[in-house]
Structures are given as structure tokens and as C-alpha cells.
Image (tube, helix red, strand yellow):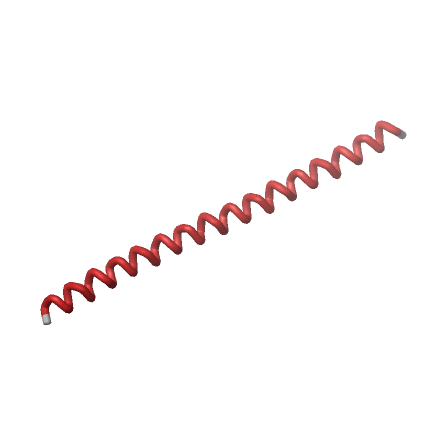
Amino acid sequence: MIILLQLMLMIVWIAFVILAIDIVSEKLMNFIKRKKEQQRLEEVKRYASFFSGSRTIQR
């Protein structure tokens, strides 16, 4: 009986660990995706400022 209880407790513990790893990996993926989008946005801003600057020089 005690062995069965320990086994069930261990299974619950493993399930919690798997859930925690899943949540952390999801947050990490979202963070990486947000970083990439921010980087892309900064590149677009840089190109936009470059092109607007070259356009003002041509005028």
C-alpha cells in the first residue's frame, strides 16, 4: 500500500515537472519570438530613416 502511494506521488511529481518545463519553454519561445520581432522592427526603422534621409538629400 505504501509503495503504491509512493508510486502515485512520484507520477504526480513527474507530471508537475513536465508541466513546469512546458510552461517555461512556452514562455521562452514567446520571449525569443518577441525579441526577433523587435529586432526586425528596429531594422525596418533603420531602413526607413535611411531612405527618408536620402530622399531629403535629393530634394
